[in-house]
Length: 164
Image 1 (cartoon, rainbow, N blue to C red):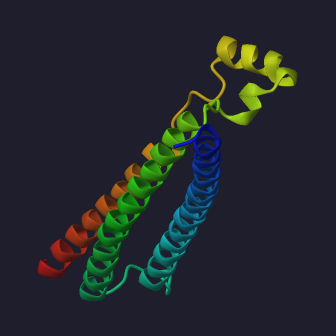
Image 2: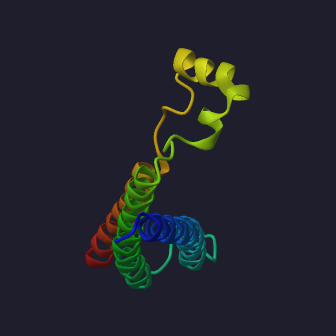
């Protein structure tokens, strides 16, 4: 292969990597939107089920409460499984982005950390541990599990009340 042909091949490979990086970033962004949309729908659904459970303002019929609680628990478990899958895909997209960035010899730190203007902010982050709290990727599955557990407790309470 001639040197000119090799340079042209390398340029084409680099252009292809840029396209792949663009696609990976787009997929990651849409995954983020899907995550927050499904989480919003999940909590709205739970609010509707809770409102249906106590719509009269009184303690509901135990069998109706048990049915609604069982339905809500099932939905919570299903939603948790779906959300975990979405979060796994987000992690995969982020790994793909890092690999492509390393192939392109790009700095994989967030852009705001790369900018010289933000040097003081970076120092402040290191000094005060800004951005080192709990991550949404950890909190979301735990929130879904807690909601499912609460519905399971409600189901148990309604079944106990129905037997008495």
